[in-house]
Structures are given as C-alpha cells and as structure tokens.
Length: 301
Image (cartoon, rainbow, N blue to C red; front, side, top):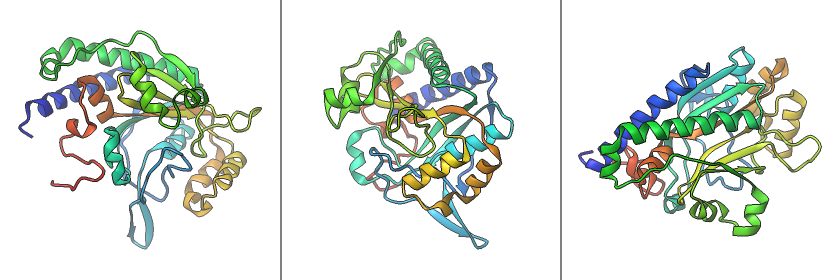
C-alpha cells in the first residue's frame, strides 16, 4: 500500500468517482445501494467471452442465495418500480478462470457503475456514456496532474467515438478482436451487436442480431463498458431463457416481477478499476486495486 503509484491511482479513482456521481445526478439519476446476496443474479452466459468457474453461493435460513455477478436483473426491477433513471456502484464477484490473469484487464472481485434508464434506446446510452467519459477525463486531467505525472501518463480527452459491428471486427481481427482493435485505436469506440445473455434485446425483425454494445478503450486497454437495450416482455424473456438452456428455477423471483410488468429500458455497467487503469495508463488492472483480486493470484489480505 506504500507504493506511490498505487496511492496516486487511488486518488485518481476517487476523483473519477466524484465526477461520475456529479454527472449522473446532474442528469437526474437516483443512486441506490447495491446488494451482494440474492436469489438470482446475472448468469453471465452463454456469453462466448465468459470464463466463470462457478457462482459463489450460501444457504441462509434454508434459502439458497448467490453472490451478485452484476445488478442487471435488479436494475430492471427498480426501473419497473418507478425509478426512471437509476444507478449504483456495485461490488461484483466473478470467479474467473486463472488464465484470465494474462488479459491484464480481468479481476475476480471488482466494482462497476451500473445504470439503467426507462424507455431509453442505444442512442440515448451512447450520449450518456460519451458525455460521462469526456467529463470525467477532463476533470482528472485538470485536477490530478501530479498523480498522472507519477504514472508518466499523457491522457487525451476523447474526441470521437466510432461504431463497429462485432461481425466486422471478427472478420478483420479474428477471435481476439477486442484486444487487437483496441491496440489499433486512438479513441474509445463502440462495438454493436454481440451474442450475449437473455436480457439483452434481440432485433425483432432480425433474429440473431442484438441491440447491445460494448465500449472499448483505445491503446490496448480493452472493454470499458457492456450494456444493451433489454428484453422486457414476459413471454419473450421466458423464451430467451429457454433458448439459452438455463434453469428456469434460477430466475423464479425475477420472472414473477417480469410477469407483473417490466417496461422497456437500456443501460450498462462501467468497470471502476478498468476506468482507473485507463486513466493512469497502468499495465495491469490489478495494479490499481487497493487489495489485488487477480485471477490466478492468491489473496493476501
């Protein structure tokens, strides 16, 4: 903890979070406290990019509870309850395969800014996130010059956000398109239409295409944010769960609320440690964590 680089990274992270809170509240978002135990959570599959070993769980008062891997299902419930713009800074536990150590961007315990907006589209989310990243980057450049100097980081304010279809990047770069396209980029960019979990909306007139997205950092820093428009009709959600061969009983409480009535929404999750890594230019995301939680490494504290 005495490393000047780590201490400066934590100061940058604190300033970034301060800016995130200010920006989202300025847009009318309501912050809610996260939960870490639930009857259901994000299945993280069948996502081709997922390498989860298992989902941690406990039994309490005879009830089976899992550690939340993201708040995405709970955000839909909150939006349906009447919170039109909601966000949380949520701790997530994802027991990644040890081989993920080599990606330099994976952790098995991390935090993300998880947000959801009622009746929003992809375009609405793009506007929110681009404005957020530009605002936070500008604030860090202005107020954390000393900390950035410790990291020898020359940080640029994002000036443009290209958009690419995932299939085009796959054709150009192959299976590791995220890493290679990120290395080629000088500004953050959006990747659209990715095969992911049941809650991301499928194009109604184009089966196999999805109204979802990733934001990718430049310079090889990889994925910043993942999100999408949501499936919100009960029958459609049920169909997607069955298509993914997921056990219905894992989503009983979620489906009960969906049956009562979800509303259209869109959102995403922005990794806090990944943002910090990008802002300071760290080699590994574990280098900006106060207590490292890197796949393949033993926990010391």
